[in-house]
Amino acid sequence: MVAKFSNLKAIVAATSLTVLFSVPLQARAESPADEAGLLAALAQADPDEAIGLDRSLQALWGSSGSPAMDLLLKRGKDALDRGDTRIAIEHLTALTDHAPGFATGWYERARAYFTAGLFGPAVADLEQTLMLNPNDYNAIFALGAMFEQFNDPQNAYEAYKRAQAIHPHHEAITNALDRLKTTVEGREL
Image (cartoon, rainbow, N blue to C red; front, side, top):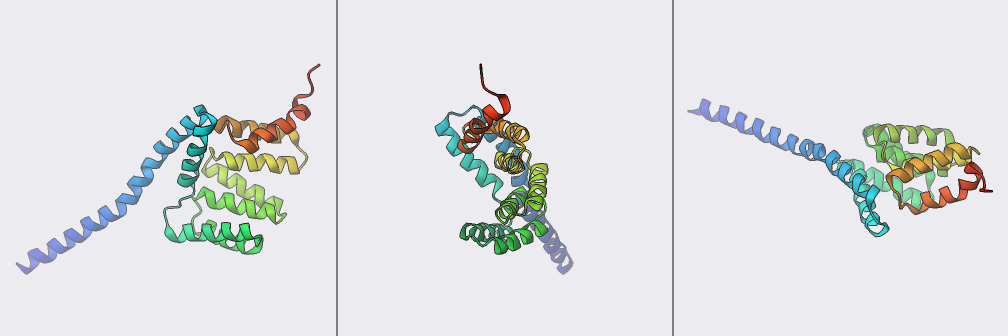
């Protein structure tokens, strides 16, 4: 009788662990479908609807699935908001080291590097961001801003157009395209 209960305990423990560890994986597996739906809706949305869809996408992309990694992200963003780029880079480097598959960590560290004037590392982090999440229109926009920084308006314009195809009502993207349009396309005669 004791042997039966010890086997039962092992089976219950194994089942509990299986359920416990499969729930986050199942939730994460559903995210791409949610993301695809949000992106499709964003591409067709009117300006008012786009605001809510953008928030939903940022919330989806901004959650690592780990409270510890989310805390590192928050600390890095808070430091960047305070203007403390050194601390921001430290927190965000810890984040990218421990969660290398989390695109938002790479994007935020690219922002910190850019703010610090470290353009090479910023470009490298934007590249990593876009490898992990090719639909991150903020990262594509940031890449366009980097091209502008390097006096390459043609590539900047192309990046902004790509970002606009994903998020047609992004104000900063629209402003950048308007600013570069005559430089890239020329003036109408």
